[in-house]
Image 1 (cartoon, one colour):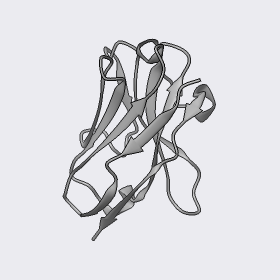
Image 2 (tube, rainbow, N blue to C red; image 1 turned 90 degrees about the vertical axis):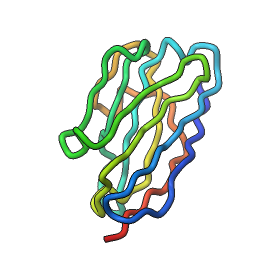
Image 3 (cartoon, rainbow, N blue to C red; image 1 turned 90 degrees about the horizontal axis):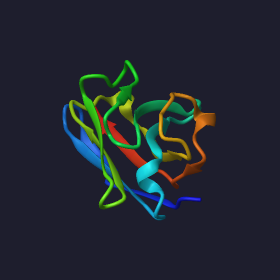
Length: 124
């Protein structure tokens, strides 16, 4: 099992930027695919972005493509989500997730370990 701790959330105006970080414990982090999901009040948890174990393959939801960038530093056991050109509809709790597999998918069920979440609020 991997313990995940997110940070970097907060309140930002529309058009602004935030960078989320997810620190992972465990020696096997570098072999796991990692992802970010988000959940707005009254809505289901949805896929945002993912990255494979080596960082060579990434994927994004259509709603964030071109604005968000996922990356990872396996030496630091950390995955990042750079969020630019933020919109009010990006407001949600953002969750970091780890899959005990090297490749990513968009499915919530693919991921085995979850962080506690960090709130991102974008004001108009």
